[in-house]
Length: 240
Image (cartoon, rainbow, N blue to C red; front, side):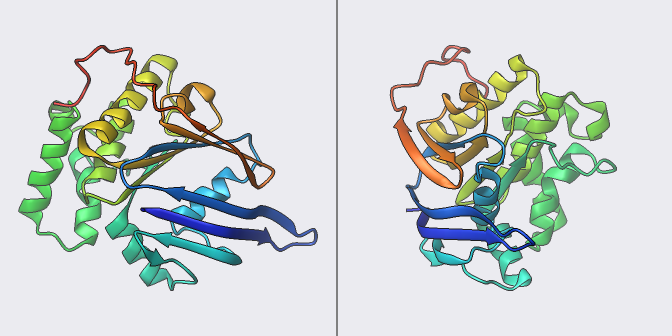
């Protein structure tokens, strides 16, 4: 079990307290490809932030890889994130003055990996994602799809337990969106990566094996989608 969430609650305190997550229960097994789907304001982003150890919760429990995640210091939270989680964001979150390979290397720098080994591993991942020729280019010189693939390479480089993708196709055109989802699907199927995608788009959610619907802070329907393996790219795929 990678993710175990039991009776999780979160309220934002303010003049009008907002009960955002109301008794959430969710288990995600190692190697699953799951989407959390809901409209804006449904609580999905708050849930993602808690999964990513970017925000705390009030009551209940969250275990990541068997370890209880609760009220960690910022230093401990950063250690867990660096070691266990790879993030992919809608806005790519690449550093504009660093090249593709430097962006991909960054998590290894924080892990204290030596420069030569960092470069070797970053090039390996860029090559796997078909971006070796773009290694020395800056994000501003790349298309949205290329930038998102650089971001995916950066998320993968630490070999995390979990990939969290927050609206990963939100800034992409529909053709590129399909390519990015296909890439995530191949990472899941070929390398057994556990991937959780947060989205409001049914087309994106339908590419995953399980769809968790969240509405007004409550998980409603959980759809099994295991028969969905049809690829618009045929058997060739993107991974080398």
